[in-house]
Amino acid sequence: MRVFYTVMVKQVKAGGELQPAYALHEAMKALRTKPGRTNDFLRWVPFVHFGL
Image (cartoon, rainbow, N blue to C red):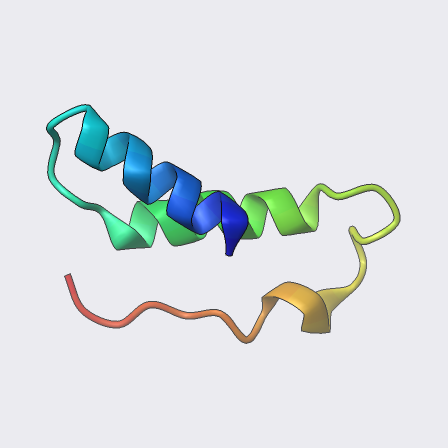
């Protein structure tokens, strides 16, 4: 969640449009590349985004 909200805050501060799907993608990328966690499918798979 830290990565998700960090990306969202950066979007607001940059004056851009909020893109929660992009923020979620970045957060999942961070979880998947964490050392020792690359094969831990259940750690990142439950997070989904529906909508715009």
